[in-house]
Image (cartoon, rainbow, N blue to C red; front, top):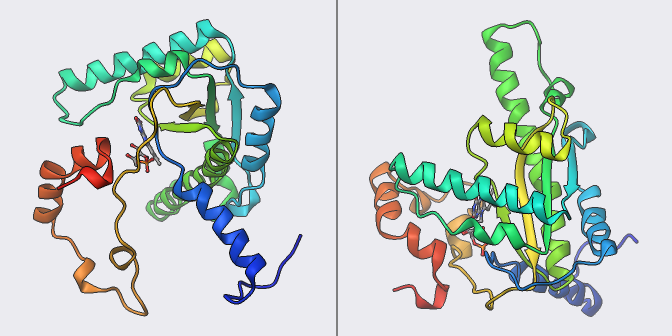
Length: 252
Ligand SMILES: Cc1cc2nc3c(=O)[nH]c(=O)nc-3n(C[C@H](O)[C@H](O)[C@H](O)COP(=O)(O)O)c2cc1C
C-alpha cells in the first residue's frame, strides 16, 4: 500500500503514525520472561518484518536461527552467564545484567551476519591503506544493515505483545566457537547478537530517553549538544547504571 507523505490534517495518517509510535514507545527491554510457548507462526511473522529491512546494496547480509531446543537455549544462556563473569573478573566496570533469563526465554533467535558482503560495498580489495579504510566503512554499512533488520523483528515482536531483549554480549571468539557447532552455523558467518522475547515475568519499565532537543539540530549541529570527554566520563560514572536499570520516572 502506498500513501502520500504525512499530512498533519489527515486523520488516517496520524492514526497510522500513532499506531506505529505505540509499538515504538512500548518496545522496552525486559530480561526475564514468563513461561510460554511461542507459536511457530509468530516466529515467521517476526522474521517477515526482518525480511523487509533496507540494507546497503540490498545485500540482506543476515540470517536468523530460531532456537526451540531447551538444551540449546540452556547452553547459549550459560555462555552469556560465563561471559558476564569473565567481564567481572577483568574489572570492566560495566553494570552487567543477569543473563540466566536467556536460558528459558520463550523466544530465542540467533542473528547471523555474513561479513563477506563487505565486498558488495565500495572497496578496492587490493590490501592498501585506502582499501582498509573503505573496508572499515563497509563493515559499518553491514552492521547498520543487520541492525535495521533486527530492529524490525523487535518491533514486530512488540506489536504481537511480547517483551524483547537485544543481546550483543557475545564476547570474544570462544562463544562463537561454542555456539556455532551447536546450531550448525557455517564458519564464514558471524553470530552478532541474540534476540530474546516472551511475556514479561514482571512488567517492563520505560527507561530514560534523551529529549528531542538533545538529539536534533536544524541546519547546523547545536553546540549545546556537544559533550566533552570529561562530561561523558562523568555520565558513565553517575548516570549510566541509572538509565540502564531504572524506570525513567524514578531517576533523580
Ligand atoms: C545494539 C544493542 C546492543 C545491546 N546489547 C545488550 C546486551 O548485550 N545485553 C543486554 O542485557 N542488553 C543489551 N541491549 C539492551 C540495552 O541495554 C537497552 O536497549 C537499553 O538499556 C535501553 O533500554 P530500552 O531497550 O528499554 O529502551 C542492547 C541494545 C542494543 C540496541
